[in-house]
Length: 215
Image (cartoon, rainbow, N blue to C red):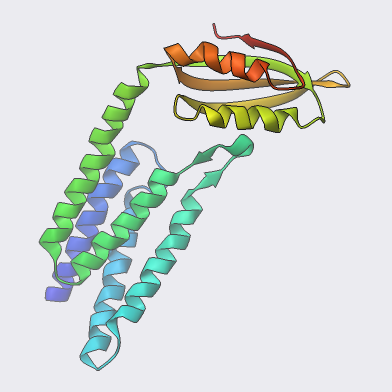
């Protein structure tokens, strides 16, 4: 009965976190997180079973951590122009596996506390981030530069210099005639830093035109 109870606690913890992810339409939703927690609990039970017969309980548990790492990597999408998404989903998968292992080891109440903390972080911190984002302006910077001269990479390096003040949402590059190209950069930036960023990009060698095309 204790093993069955541990399985149920693991599924409950995974379901609590998965429900929050499902409501936000994230890649790893309710079923995925429940299965991750349940599977982690099962492997933990197997580890404890081996330990009773003189085996090393850490070996199976270590492989769970490794396997979950690969599963989390699948939730991370590296899109064009250096945009990366899915980091929170990957971290959530990792935490849910830990909750499942905790429940599988017989520490169900601690697993429930961990699940509550996880849901709290995902919801409350998200609201805090949304509040902080209100202090930033969404801007569109449009620039024209000489194509094939490495200017695009130089501009990206310049944007990274302002990473403490600006968050780049997307970068779109299109050819403009035979020799030039146009880059549209959508970014969030603190109001006082917007002019500084534009001036900095203007000084990049090979940049012909820079303008704030925000509506």
